Image: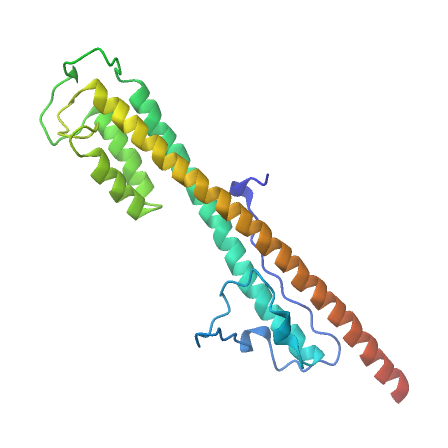
Length: 227
C-alpha cells in the first residue's frame, strides 16, 4: 500500500502535436454538468465516452486534458485527506495512551486522580485537550464533537478538576474507539474511490496517447504530400 505521507501530486499536460493550434489550451475548455454548473473538478470517475462523439482530434485532446485535470484534482484531494486522517489517527492513539495510564479498575467506586481548581485542566486533562486542539487544526468539526462528547457527565473531561471515575475512563476509551472505527471505514471507501479514479485516469491517458499518435501520423502524411 502506498504511504500516504509520500503521496505524489498528479498533474499532467498532454503535449500538443505538431501543427495543432497553439492558441488554445485545456484551461479554455470547461465542462458543464447536467445541472448546468460549469466545473473542471466534478466527479469524473467514469469517462463519458459518448460526450466525445463528433469531436475532432484536437477537440478530443482538449476534452481529455480537461478530464485529466478534474481527475488529478480529485486524486490529490483524496491523498490529502488520507494524510490528514493518518495525523488524526495518531492523535487519537495519543489520547488512548493517555487514558491507558489512568486507573480503570471497575471495582473502584470512588474518585481517582489529584484534585485541582475546576476549569483549569492539568496533567492528563491538558494532554487530552492539547490533542483535541491539534485535531482541530485538521478537522475543526471533529474536534468540536470530541470536546462536546468528552465533556459531558460520565466522560473523562467532565468537570476538569483533576478527579475522575474509572467508568469515565472506560466510557471515553470506547468513544475514541468508535471515532477511530468511523475514520477507518471512511479511509477504506476513499481507497476504493482512489483506485477507480486512478483506473479512469489511465484510460484517459491511453486515449490521449492513441489520439496523438493518429493525429501525428495524419500530419506527417500531409507534410509528405506537400513535399
